[in-house]
Length: 590
Image 1 (cartoon, one colour):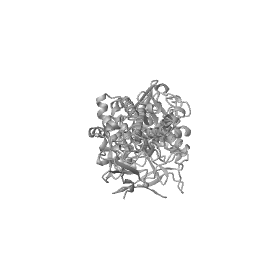
Image 2 (cartoon, one colour; image 1 turned 60 degrees about the vertical axis):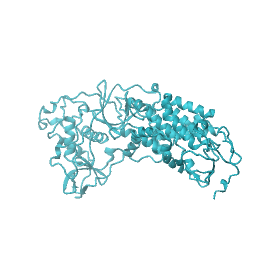
Image 3 (spheres, one colour; image 1 turned 120 degrees about the vertical axis):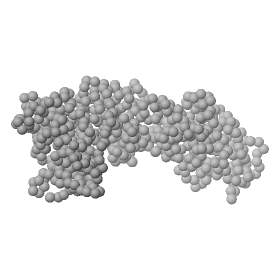
C-alpha cells in the first residue's frame, strides 16, 4: 500500500541529530530528547526562553523544560514543512523553539491581562506567561497528525497519541492535505505535552484558558492577545528562516479585529479625542487608574475610523462593538458589562452635572511608554452603582408616575426655567457628545427658590421659547446618551413607535421639572406649552397634539398618551442608530 515504505536496510547506528540530511535509505532512528535538544542553536534558544520567563531553575524545568522535552521526543526530526520554511530534518523542533522564544520576548512588553488594574497584572503575570509559552509550543503540534504520514519499521502507521517513536521511521507528506486542519488537530495532543498540574492551574483563569484553547486550535480571531503574539512570533520565525527580517515581522500589525480596534483607539486618543477638558467639553479623562472614554463618542469614532480604513466585519451597533472590546480585554469589564456609570468632577468644582457612561481602558494599551502620556486629569472619575428596580412589562405598577428612574443631581446644570427676571440664573444647556461653546461654572441654586411664590402669582416668570426648548431637548439628549432615560421599557417615558419617537405626556415633562428644579408641582405645564409651540411634534388631521398608544401585555392592555416627534434625529443625532420600535406599543390612528 505504501510503496515508499519499502526499506532496503536499517542503519546500524542512529543518525545523529547534528546531521541535517536525509539518510540514503530514508530511515530515521528515534532519539532521546536530551540528544535532540543538544545542538548549539537549540541550547541557545532554551537559554533565551529561560531568561525571558524569569523563573528559578527548578521552576523553569517543571513548567517549561519538561514540556519542551516531551515535545522534542514526540516530533523527533520531523520537518516543519515540505518545501517552505524549516523544511530540513528537525525543522519542526527548531521552528517551535524559535516561536516560543519570540513569543516570550514580546510577552515582556505587554501588561496582562489587558485592561486590568496593576495589582491584578502583577498577580497573574506568571500564569499569562505560561499560557503564551504553551500556545507557542503547541501551535504546530497537529502537523504530524494530519499533514504527513509516518510509518514505522514494522509497517504500522504512527500517530502522535501513541507517544514517542520507539523504532525506525519514515515520513511522507500527504499530497491532499488541508492547511487549515493542523491547528484544529493540535487540541487533541495538548494533554500529551503539558503537565496536568499546569492545566489545572491555567483552568482557574477563565479568560486566559479560553484564549489558550482558541490559540491552540488556530482560532486566532477569538484568542485575543495570546493569538496575536503567537501569530507574530510564527511570522518572525518564518521570516528569519527565509532570509527576511524577523524584527519587521514582529512589528507588523495583525489583521484581527481586536488589533484593529486597538489601533483605532490609539490613533483617536493621541490625535483626535479631547482629554481632561473642563471648558470645551471632553471625550475622556486620564487618571492614575484608567483612561475613561465617553462610551458613545469612542465607539462611534472607532467604527468610523475602521470603516474609513477599509476594515470589514466591524459591528454595526455600539452594543456589539462594546461586546467585542470586552471579550478581548480592550476595555475593563464592570461586573460583566463594558459600560461604567461615573461621576466626573474637577478639583476646581467643575462637573458635567450628570453621571456619564464611560469605557474604562488601561493607559498602557494606548501609551506603551509612561512618559508619552498626557498630564493626568486634575479631578476624580468615580464609578457609581446603578439601581434598576423596573417591574416586568406584564405587571405595570398602578401608580407608575412615582416610579421614575433613579434621580440624578442636576443642580450644577441650573436649568431652572422659572426664575425672577430681576435676578435670572445663568442658563447652561448641556450639549450632547461634544460641547462647542465655553461652559460656565454655575453654583447650585437655593433649594427654597421655587417656594418664593406660586407660579400663577409670578406673571413674568414664563420661560422664553428658545431657553425652555433648548433646556428640555438637551436634557432628553443627555439622558438618552447616558442611558439615564430608559427607552421602550415598561416605566420609560420615551418609546419608539413606527420609527418615530413617542414622548409620554405629561410624565416626561413632570420628570424634567422634578430633576432640574426639584419641583413636583404644576411647573411642568409651562414646559409643555413651550415645547408644543416649537412645532416639532406631529399633528393629527383635526389639529390634535396628543396621540394615544395601546400597550399590549401578556394578560392585559392599557393606553398611554403623548407627543410624536417628527424628526427622531433631534434626540439621537444624524449618525446614531435609532432603537427598534417597541413591539408592545401600537399607535391608535385618529
